Amino acid sequence: MLVKTYSSTVFGINATTITIEVNLEIGINFYLVGLPDNAVKESQQRIKAAFKNNNLKFPGREITVNMAPADIRKEGSVFDLPIAIGILAVSEQVKLDLLSKYILIGELSLDGSIQSTRGILAIALQAKEEGFKGIIVPKANALEAAVVNNLEVFGAENLSEVIKFLNQEKGGMQQTIVDVEKQFGQLIEDFELDFRDVKGQMNIKRAFEIAASGGHNVILIGPPGSGKSMLAKRLGSILPPMSLDEALETTKIHSVAGKVKGQVGIISQRPFRKPHHTISDIGLIGGGSYPQPGEISLAHNGVLFLDELPEYKRTVLEVMRQPLEDRTVNISRAKFSIDYPASFMLVAAMLFHLMN
Image (cartoon, rainbow, N blue to C red; front, side, top):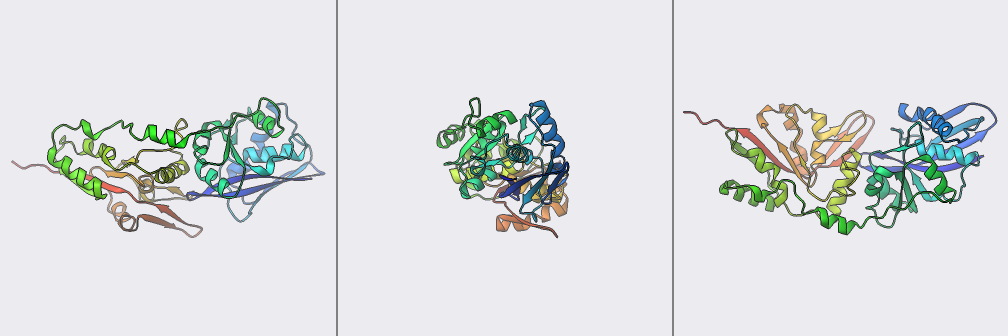
């Protein structure tokens, strides 16, 4: 017997739908194929423990799980839930009616609870684009996914809730609904650090107003304690408010990096990033063995503040030259090539000591 469930993986800042095919035959083996990494391969042990602790039966037969397309590397533990549901469906413990309509995302704990994950907004946007009716995600990520209109979002705390929902029984999950326009409007003006708090400094405040109006880069030179960092941290409060499209794009990047707070569905204020001067090239522009956006992409639509500018390594400063011009950064390696957006306002500060 063959059953298909659907999940998704994030590459760069975009998601790709993954089909989980579960086949049950005579035998006692468990095969997991489709280019899974170690975290995916370990799902068998997590699923077995979750089944046992929730009084579910793990089939004592040969199970083959294929993750298609097989040429894309599957990373992370988000496939625990779709694999588990596929095993339950192929062993006739879960109904098949709703499996083709929903994307399933979530890491299983040994007690069957579902842990939060990253990249949910990108996955939700892709699910909507491909015509899925909805998406089942960890409850901690439900608000983030619910900002996507015309997509049903269900947040699950544990495996039992997902089973009850798919079997259309009472006690299942409730749909998460977010009024994006209302939430966006409420959060947009709530600044923790406000430019209006700055007293005096009329010349530099005027310079900041001009820079903010045109999106110009700024360098601040002055003695210690003159207010360089204090002013830079408040620059975001006088920048033009983000549009809803900009907010969604910014949230998508931060979601992939795991920087979105669970209680906030959308980032409505322009980001402010302040990397330490010991940061590496990859930490600034992104990339790595498992590609992640760097600081310049996390500052997209916002401000990147480099304090103590002369302390940064020359190579780190050099890699910013092209992103500052093109407003995007391309990470090219032997096995992949990724484009990250990087449209930010650069603010730098350095010391200037007056000589007697």
